[in-house]
Length: 287
Length: 137
Figure 1 (cartoon, each protein chain N blue to C red):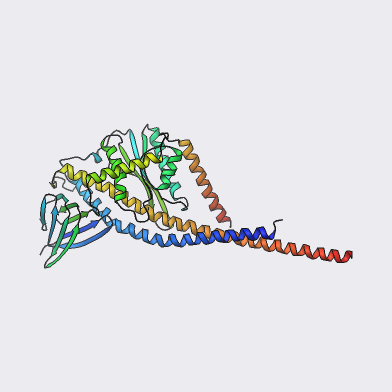
Figure 2: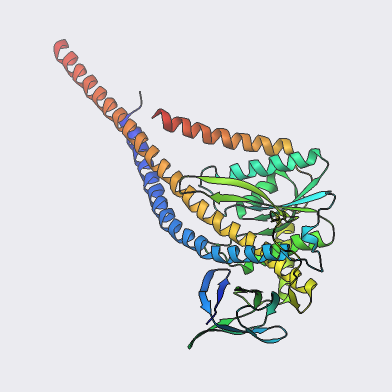
């Protein structure tokens, strides 16, 4: 039977772990609020740019943009948005599972995949399983700057421009609520045409200043960038929420373990006393 | 007096939303004045002020570049938060590529699906076990 010293040591170590996890839970809870605010602050821009893009799609434009063009697909690029740090339950793993499943599905149709990765967890995962990685953005912090993502988006869009890739998918977690985060794989390019409203007159076009091509290129690039940025800040909010839940569970589990071990400790202590007593009684009767 | 709806947003926040009788902005090709009922227009914005007039009130915002869309009843200003230049984009792109190359030097480019699914399965199993343990307690 285990001795009391051993059990006491174990209890102490679990208690210190519990302290850490409960501190992390509190940190995550306070960060969660901030990341959710950031996520909400970013929404107006993405909504507005979406409005503009849908107007542009309706306009009878002189210049059909390559992002709308359906090409015969030979290769797809996945932009995978994951967290930089772990300890957030199944958040990243569930996402990677979807990405790998989608990639395998495309692979069967003889479509190759390449990856643009955001977050340390994504790059370390694809480092271990392989896969062609075209760009990486890491350590963006809790308040990512849109500038940090420009490079990565440009690499992907350049590949598309040069016909190296034909489809782009954005893979990230969607924040449903604090308890639920939904991994999601969404097609970015070709842009899905908006539902055509039959009655809408589509005979008008914008006045473009300067050139339509230049403007639409810039605007659509900005649109893709804003979608990627939005995905990153949303994923951040997901990460903190998932981390909070994971740490709360860890703290609860540590509490349960401590209770069990304390029971064991008392049993062991009692057994030792009983044994000692019986030895004394035995010794006395022998004399 | 007729008014036009105006929304000014940047990627990190909503800057202004309201009605205006006249909007002035600096387009890449020059100064613009937009009154209600303006014909649809799409233009780039140069760094400069965006002035929103509503009757006698006037508000001024600084915009460091971006896009401006005009619909007959709506003006949308998509402002960039940062100064942007083609050369800057290029250097950022090179940086992102370099990181990727460093991370994955000498790596096979085809995905090992078997390995990936095995790793994922293991991680999922571990999570499930933890959940089961939790339920039991």
